[in-house]
Image (tube, rainbow, N blue to C red; front, side, top):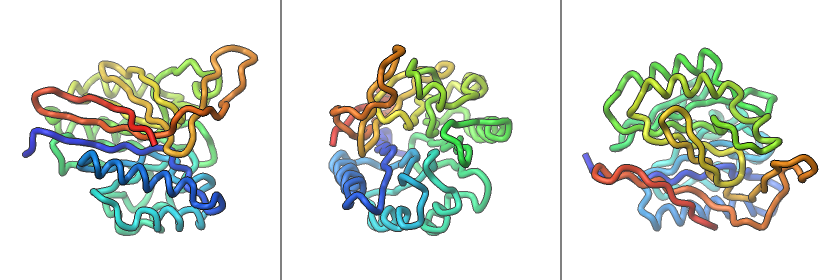
Length: 252
């Protein structure tokens, strides 16, 4: 097994059918950059489309027809599980019903994808069923380096909006992670900007959106979720057996 691994995390792509192809074009650019960096795998961490519409998933499916490397999809609060399954039947790692939890075992770093969405809501929830699934998935392999991925940040960002619509039972998530020291990194999206936090012993990286960036609202009177001129992009997570893991923002 190779002693190195590179994961391209692209998040909050918000592909639309009525934006002239702008979001899809940004996604294609991100995948092309991932190929340039010799990514072993691409993981899209939710909010794949903007309004969970069939025409948007059709555009997304066309955009992802020929990915440069193995590609995996996770849902976000803007997504519909049933439509993801319908438009991506070749993605057989997805369970046939229920939450879209899955594990990726084929690489030197194990990846565990946790579906934390609540249909019809903006926030995320682990719930007892998610906690039990995560505990079981992590218990299968306690020695292999592991990345856990979910859509909602499992820590307080101190943003007036996003802390209300993040992972609302983050303490339970951290309790599970704390029992598994093999978890090197937790990755997520949702906030449309790079942020860093912690869940138990594991650093958490919030990826930016590949489409647009939100600013912060930390004080009363500040604009909630303002779109900013900051650069959209994606995250490259690089691991070696000797050096561990490092995470890099790649701008678009």
